[in-house]
Image 1 (spheres, one colour):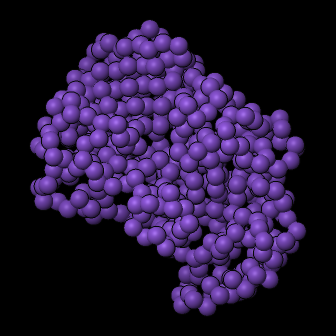
Image 2: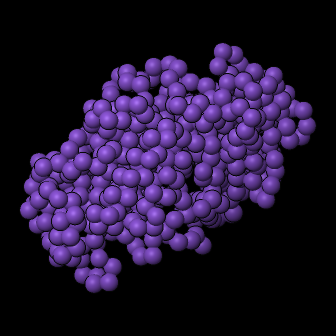
Image 3: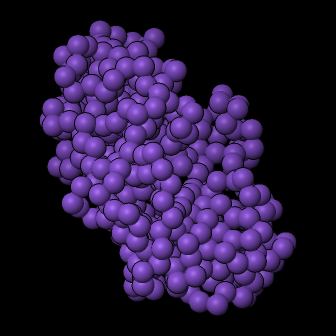
Length: 435
């Protein structure tokens, strides 16, 4: 692997790399058994070159927390780097000079003034992957924890990640290079038949049904397209408690079936906000995660997505929303509810040791399986929009994702160039293909 001005190869290789495993109570240095395999006590890591990718596959009989892959080589001076973010494209996405302490989730672009090189992980990985670059090499950290504890994969093989390197072309614009590189990272995509647009109105916690209907009529008057009508999403506040697990409508907005019908009558397509993992009742205590995992806890019980009862609850809730007549479901707060933060947590931000019910899954797999479950639960009856989801894991499971925080969150928007644009309330569908 290289980020030099003139890359030596288009395919990453681990021949010159080094691998380290952070187990539950010790650190293990893996030794290169062959050109494609690292081994250590109870751990086997295969780095298999394929069609333009390097496939990382792991087998382990010991509980694991992290893997570290290191490619040591002198990094040229003067390059600028752009990385991804975990959850949405807020202020940290910027071209910066070399900063060894900077975490670059999923991928990075390196620009030398003439070429824009791309190095990254394809969507749908089974580990939370972040890069670090220093003057003497490139490091890839793979977080394979289960909650805040070690994962125990048992007899199964973990398909950790597929790595991709794209050398830049002379005088290729960075934007063009980024789009072409992103197309290589895209394992699958889920696109609607028509562009999606519309309005997620202000939270309806203090609104009544007539206000919602009036807002829908106002949106309909703004939209001139008679074929592709806008979506009007009923926001947080329609439900009885903080979360929507169990799908209990609150008293303010009334019958959700009638509300969806009235939005259609107003000239819009109805959408509904969901917080699928949060329950406000004791009904789901048997499948709830332990409380006290984080300093700030949501009001209610967070359901364990690896528990069979949670899976059934989500399937029934989504089916109920579709039966009510809502054509778009916007699910929210999955990362916040499970990890306590808007991004994967650091070891210091959570109580140590807690894990999901199924300890054989990594946190990345838990999240990816949750997004897949939500898509499958619609049975094709509704479109899906994701907010507060890890975009690299949700890719291919949602029709659109929020791309930035909404106005009013000044701390997170301090470097966002559109301080008045509520891009969280109006997510955009991606282009169908890159040139």
